[in-house]
Image 1 (cartoon, rainbow, N blue to C red):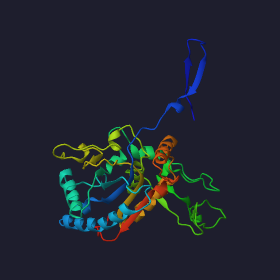
Image 2 (image 1 turned 90 degrees about the vertical axis):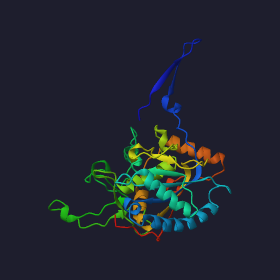
Image 3 (image 1 turned 120 degrees about the horizontal axis):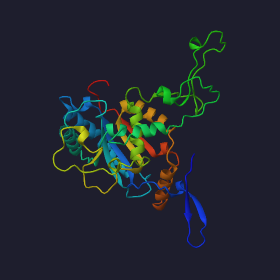
Image 4 (image 1 turned 120 degrees about the vertical axis):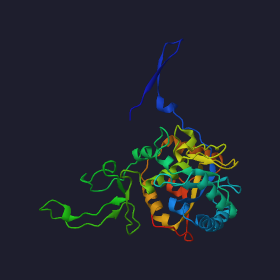
Length: 331
């Protein structure tokens, strides 16, 4: 690591003092709730089918039961937790109806079940927004697990766009001739007796859904602090919504809540079909290097609130998967 040194000269002694510029850097500030509660993450086909309003109402009816349980859970470090709710809309992989149509449909369906959505986010903003490229920043911060016996024959995640949670299998059919080594099973790095091996595609010509899900988690947990503050400090939209999704802020504030978008912990209520996506996202999160200044900031602020914040970011992420939502079509 290259460390820049600044020179200071005093008038009295003309002494030169050197100090590290890294010591002057501080983590950009963000507001923090106790919990960022995601009420859903749905695709275009869920939002644009003919009976989408009734289907959304059924979905939020199931979600509302979980929300009541989560609000009463005694694990947030306080008896009066600050909980902000959010909803993620896929405008990255799909073409959507105009924002006003989709947002009003989602908010209206949630309201019928007694739910309030504080923030709506655009999934495309997890890839990029303006000059901020969150997905690329997270990709560049991946530190793949060191694998025993690795010889460098496989391309890196930077080259292949794939990230694994252990050692991939060995196929002798693909090996050079005269190689005696037989087939070898894949092996999870931190297996609990038996391996659960995952190999996650990060990107091809687009970032993968599972990778953007990991970016979304990092953003909600206050672990990404981009210079474009609209990503962590959502804005209200005055007047009518624009006709194009790209003209919207990356995260929209819908209510007058004082509870911040970012939080010490995240909890996501999702249809069961997202389980594989979230498992893949956790594989990514396990191998992402987080800015130590941001971790220090979160720990210090949690300590001031008497909150026992888990040191591992994966332990700050919780889920509930529900079966009551049937997709219109398979993705």
